[in-house]
Each structure stands twice: as C-alpha cells, then as structure tokens.
Amino acid sequence: MTLKTSSRLAGIMFLFYIATGIAGLIVFSPASKGAGTAAKLASIAAHESLVRWETAYAFVMILNPIILGIALYALTRDTDPEIALMALLFRTGEGFVVAINAVLKRALLVIAALPLSDSLFPTAVLGASGVTALFGATLFAIGSTLFSWLFVRSRTIPPWLAWLGVASSLLLVACLPLQMGGTLKGMITNLIWVPAGIFELTIAVRLLTRPICVGQAPSPVPQRQ
Image 1 (cartoon, rainbow, N blue to C red):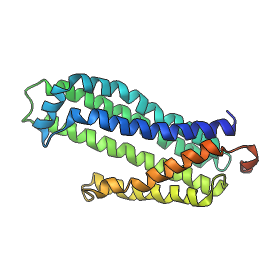
Image 2 (cartoon, helix red, strand yellow):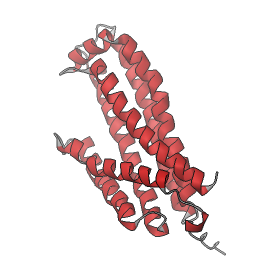
Image 3 (cartoon, rainbow, N blue to C red):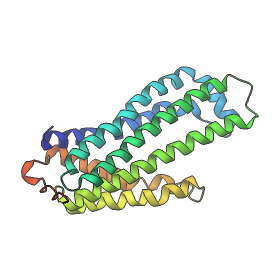
Image 4 (cartoon, helix red, strand yellow):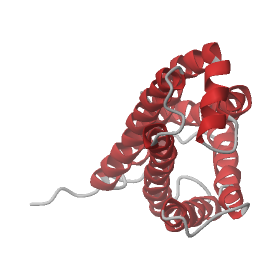
C-alpha cells in the first residue's frame, strides 16, 4: 500500500473502531447487568441470543486493532522499524486478548444455565473477564504510546497532535494498572479515556483529509553496520 492509502485506511479504522466499540457497549451491555454474580448470571441467561451475537461480534473487535496497527506500522516504520514493529505487536496482542475475553463470555452463557450461582467458579470467570478487558486496554495504550512517539519523531502530523497522542496514551498506561489493582475506581476510570478519544477522533480526521504522502515521509534510518 502507498502511504496515502495507509493514511486513509488508518483514518477509517480509527473511526470504525470507535463507532463499533460504542455500539457494542450500547447493544450488548444489557446482557450482563446486575449487582453481584447471581444477578449477572441471571441477566446472561435471560439474554442468551444477545450473548451469542456478542461472541460473533467479537471478531470485528479482534480485527479492528490488527488492521489499524498494520496501517499505522506502514506510516511509521521508516522512522524506526523496531519501535514500529513493537507497537504493531502490542496492537495485535490487544486483538488476541479480545478473543480470550469472547471465550470467557461464551463460557458464562454455559455457566448461567447451571446451578452454580453461589459458588466461587462463576465469580472467578466474571472477574477474569473484567481483568482481560483491562489487560487488552493496557496493550492498546502501550501500542498507542509507541505509534504516537514515532509520529512525534517523523513530524508527518502536527507536533501538537502527536504529543497529545503520547500524553493521552501514557495517562492510560499509568492508570490502567492501578484500576486492575483496585486502587483506581469510580468515574475517573471513564474520564481517563477522554483525552485518548479526542486524539483518535482528531487524527482520524487529519489522516482522511490530509493523508501522509511520499514527500512527508521521513528518510529511512541508516542500517547498522
């Protein structure tokens, strides 16, 4: 792909990823509502078809970070191929974590049909599902930090936008482990995503309206002897 094509693909995928993520939260969140394990299992059992569709929908959410990562890798590999590859691997890992979480949610559908509401097993599976989601988000944040840093170095997008990507991603890298550890709770766990959302919406529009072309590409790094 040319740089211009990769830019447009990245812009489309940024928007598509955001749109499908929000749509998934709205459509599928009723399937696992409830305060406590028993209530959540009852909700899952009552929304069996919705849970099955959520598992199928997970394939979209698996492909999103991988395709976006490939497009961003194409835009940044000439700046530093090793860091660009590392960032791509983190975004690919994010997709695999989504797959693991989809398997756990499908397992909950089976568990919900069994008389296990008072046992520790379904509680453990529900907890594991939450942790894997946060783990995937952390991989996203690390990959986003690396790609944003490469944009800072290459100057193929405005410096202020690249630095916004670095800062918003580092905020997530710092806060998500605290959330996994139970230190960070409440509304703040939603607010930390606002800067990253602004960055992704802005860079998506930028890459679609002013795609990176050959003249903007940085010179390849010299080969080590």
